[in-house]
Image (cartoon, rainbow, N blue to C red):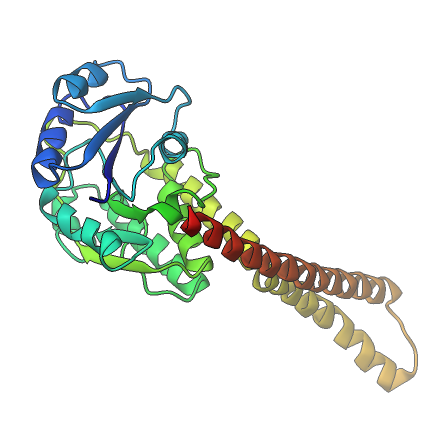
Length: 306
């Protein structure tokens, strides 16, 4: 029998964690259910342990830190990651696991946005933020993912053991999606139902602070994974500025035979040089990124053998 691990990162989810553990044990009775407590102060760990979960701890605050530790410590053939706030019903768990175990998907995304998210979620800026992030990722990475930031995902072992976690907080889901797109891993999406947190349960997500972090992560990862496009865009801006400054001087030279604005010509030359440097940087880094992709393929082969 393939081994299945249900991963639940938790921070102060005492109100809902017992129900989440019970629901997923019923849906996947053969799975090991792990609750990783992230410095909770409301006895989430004790409640989870009484509910039958395997409880472990991550002292570094942040969801990204928790997932890094989970992926490093736990061995399984399929990993199902959920939140501990009871917003994801367990009815789709079996289907998501089967996408990994039977259809060889590397990451299965639980798509809330095509289901009940916009009617259940009462936080307006969260709805707008999800749309903005989805638009940016699909535009920059030429994809068609319907839900970028969902916390409901299933993974293959090869994904978990080859994914370098860099994020520390809630931007981890965005990083996972971009990594899978860049490395041409097999992605599947499963529409899942979503329900808002029960009354009294408080979200740990700060709309503006974490939203800015996610946008900053997208910018950084676009620079890492698409350096030629990123630096060429900057080069084009400097080139346009150089041409705007240079053309009037050049037209004057054609009319009079004189260069009357040397400072403007010098600045235009500097901007043109900067544009060339950015373009060359993009080419060099693009070669390095392609080499890293080749090395990653070799790592995948070694992972599959084990």
